[in-house]
Image (cartoon, rainbow, N blue to C red; front, side):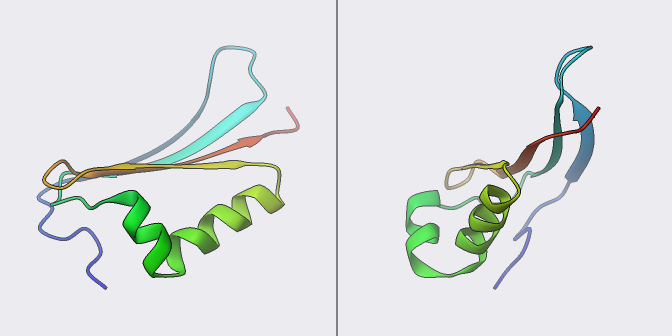
Length: 81
């Protein structure tokens, strides 16, 4: 499996959405070759495992990618504070 395939830059970050939001996020984005998300979800277990684990803790996994467009993976979860 090629992680960050042909990427020249990778960004990651954490934060809360809005000043008083109880939703936190963890985000990783690269500028690599990208992929077709639907196809990747059917082929392997990696993204499906991430999605299932996010749902188990009451969160949501967002994966956005397209060929030649890089990839964004974001985990959003409700936080206690």
